[in-house]
Image (tube, rainbow, N blue to C red):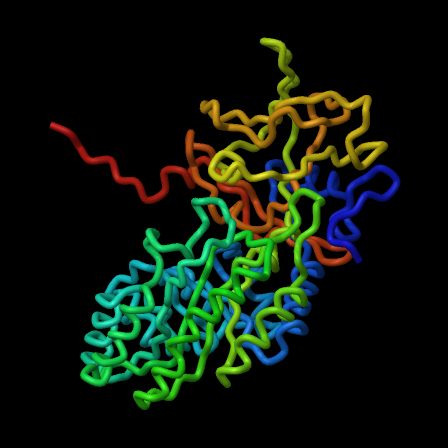
Length: 419
């Protein structure tokens, strides 16, 4: 079963017409495919049978999706206390969860230690010693993997590239080597392994090979100094096909990565996020107006940049197509339009000069590839309530996050009495 497909000119979300969902729950609405998500997780597990698969929660933190993956046996990669709390609430295991991020607060470190986190991915020496201090105060040992920045350009957008020198992520190899000499003087720390993460939306296997070889230089040195490492965490970043031009499969990545890691004799950890959920989600939006001015045509939708910021933030491409259409791809007769939202920003757009068949007010458009870094990055800019989220499963679907109401916008605000 394909997550999203056109049948007789109608878009289906698994076995449910997209327009049925839009009519029932309103728009904008994010819709996810349960079978698609599970299939992608299983593809990852099959490609990396000897690895711990840790779903990257920052890609999509909806509790229903996390529960779906937890029930399938997934581990998790979190970058905040809130994400770890979500994992636990969804039935995930802290013991199968890694905690990353450059700015872990003392409160977050204590919370993760109390929960029994599998490892911290440690980004700097100062963070390393701080984690050790807190663990010693609590009376435990913190399991840590040193995140090493291998200075490898993975070809990602500059905003999502994390493996080159000059970014805030990770320590260089020299710093990591110096940490090995200092670690025995910190009884609150247990060196569990090494970690790397090159960025996001990577469409080549070669950067992983280069980075593993660079980071792997630490492993024999650590062994010589008496450390018993357990894990080689290669992070995530595996790209997906947004444009129709193709992307490597999990098996492609695994064929390049597994032999490189195997020579170290360590347990492999991978952190896929986008590659699990990205193409298993869409954003449904209703056409409000079709405007022609200044020599351009604008399709104005009820979804805006506050709902899906990726196009303006990353110049990201998302396929857009009506949910009812007599053809599935642009034709010579289709005219280029700008697909935009209602937010008061020129940057509030989803596509420029995109060929679409004729659309009219009240038509529903589907914005594809919206399962990752989409709702998770949404906001209330312009005081707009955030969309609802729906999970389709075969011939049924369920609302898994209610649409925000106007009263939600001011919830928690306190008006101070002025003079």
